[in-house]
Image (cartoon, rainbow, N blue to C red):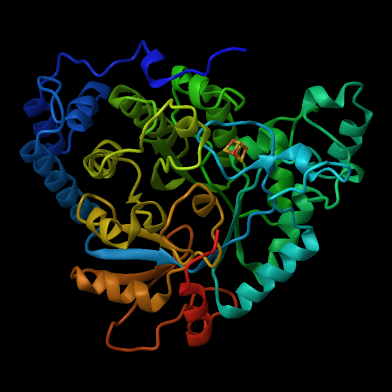
Length: 459
Ligand code: SF4
């Protein structure tokens, strides 16, 4: 049996070395000049002329990013009333940073072990979303594992069923499972309750939804849009550099295909977000190259509304369990990731701080390092919790107003695309959403429900 790769085995072609100096790079950032990959490496490392992070230099980078944030978006901190409704955890792609998935074969009716995961039917999704829409959410976000029985629609199902080697294209018929996720278009249509905004179908899911066919990504996204899809989450990006993907997610689509899918989504008129998942095996050169690919994509499309740095949560992941990494990123790296994203991505207005990844205190600090968006209420959150993140599942409008006001900034409820914005007066409780199709300003959860959710999870 092959020995698993370990941290000591990793040698990359891209390394954080440049001919640029930290001071030059910082001056360019302060002047608002477009930064190069080398500039970004200097800022991420606080200079390649020394080992480790220089704290004084780091503070200067954060300050420059905070100033840029104020120039671009002012003092408002936005957030959205949203629900996470992930359809299934069944997946056999085997990404080594992920512990959201449950091995797809454990979901089969004749499996010897009982699966620890879940799959929802379209009817179950509709019910969950309908409840949240009544409570006042604006958006439902849905990102799922690549369940082998998931098909785009009836037509793709027919093609998959007729395939001579379905295993080769990662397909198994729904009858093999206790619960079938149905089709992507049925799930999207089911979640599209009363016109709530549906944010779903990452490039990886779009790939799954076209497997076995010769359809273009445009065709796939057009069908999804017709079913009710509004915007696309630019997750599954991880690090858009092949030598890193080869280590952490060899089963995933490559950088070019990810970019192709995103461009296709933009071409059919879908808005989108972009992400980076950092702090595992990659170095600062990879982070900088990733940012360049996102900025280039935005130059071509203009459809990216926000950039979301996702700090790697290492607990319970194969990368950690196999000793490929010993931890996630440091706080210094987290802060510099936010700051350099703000400075480098001169064509993306919003940078998000995630309380799920950073926690409340550090999440708030990120709003002074270049971030201006504080994500969403997330009525349910499975992904980070299953990977060992410990920051809970829900933030109320009251929590948001209190946190954002405590740092002297302005709380603003937003729509997914930031077009609708509602400034909230901290002196006028109660605080509840008003932008969703059925939102009337009532808090999302009652006092009792909030108290119940605040109890520690038992897993
Ligand atoms: S990251 Fe996504 S594709 Fe990869 S194993 Fe996890 S659920 Fe599957």
